[in-house]
Image 1 (spheres, chains in turn brown, purple):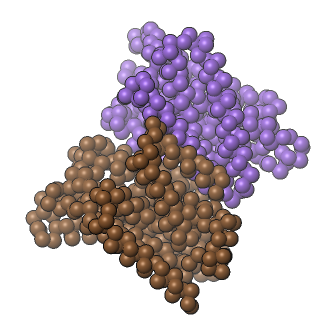
Image 2: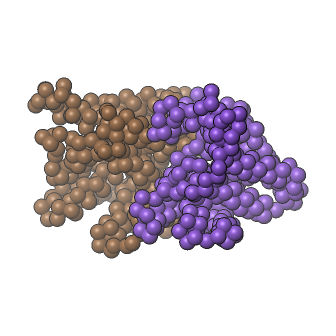
Length: 324
Length: 295
């Protein structure tokens, strides 16, 4: 009990520290942290499917892109602009609801697939959405991208707090799942789906719930991103990087742990900032990501938090096997 | 009618390339159980390195092809020993997710290094196309592109070669045994290391060669690798892993659908058509259209 209180106090302290940080940061650092929070949202949401449910989901960026595109296109529509004081609220709400509905609809056919087929189908989903966005250029602006009308754009500071809020919620959802009945049912599906069905779990319903749960904050992240950058195109919103970095970060940190995604995001973002802001290398960023992804998959397959020396450290620190 | 015959030839030659590509893909899957996402990127590397050696260093084809051969043999040995074996040693439960992630990383590293290298040193807008233009053949009053016929011929030759290798030779039979029944394969004392290494080397060479054939007829850019992997996946999911007749039929079908679809709707829809086919087949017939057959 005492230990729990200590941990809670520590987390609260860290959150307060992050919240009072902006006045001391340069604007580029603020942007870096803002983007890191969005990555954390995507990674934590990926972990619901990849860590708890045990499905390799390569379409986390699809929700990000759907959220971003829906809110941008709605705000550009005269009908939404006409209801002036509420247009931002209505557009955001509609984008979130639309992403949730999309996730709910696509979940049923997707979850008939398993393993390799599921991973491939989600990957194809991202490519299909990206190609549709490029080709339906009259609706989406095609490869030129789409602009959010100027009056709706937010500044980075607002985005920082919104993204922080969303990141806390996403990690909080995972924390709740790690100790609730719903999360336990996800884990039982991961371990043995047939056994889970035979003890009376409605497996397909639980999977749909997991899918919608993981889609909503990601769509929110896309909305915040679109409103802050003011411009999106198919590469930014629906690129392969958007969908593949979350699995990489979650795997690096350790899937199925609450702190795994957080650790993975911190490491990858730190490497990212270090290499692309301070140490300029003549190699493309995707090359580094690729090599890191390959090395992680080959040598730390279960993630840093699941490796033996991490367990040793946490044993010493907390005298317990779980880090939370 | 004339247009349709030409479209038919074009679709069939594209389908031949796809069939060769997917057959080598399914060989790797069925022997090593590794899903190689970097397969399409190897295809693009085959195209890109040929373009570099042939067009920009202006080497004679007789020097170019041995260099390519040595390069891809070396690459596939590295790939086999550095990635495939490491993953296989981690155990069955990790093989799928591990192979997807590791080969994704490899694909990113390969395509970005080729794309950036090409953009920095040679041309900021990288597209690869070999300017080989043979005189078209007149047949029944129609001009038929000789390039496409040549591609169709070579792709057919390679597929026949693979087929004979699998049916007639010792190692080919070993590879089939390994795909069908791994336990039995071990009992009769064959060495899985050598068989799967040979298969990975041969499949990589065939993939690189299909990339070279591809840029004889269609230009491709350095970042076109992942869509190519998805097309190979489309075909083997349509056909079932390792079934040669199924792969030939599905490859030809996909080539025809793409060519005819882009004739009617414009070339930008070619990718969308094949992705949509893959997505729908996955959702409604996840076991493939032709059932499941092993080689």
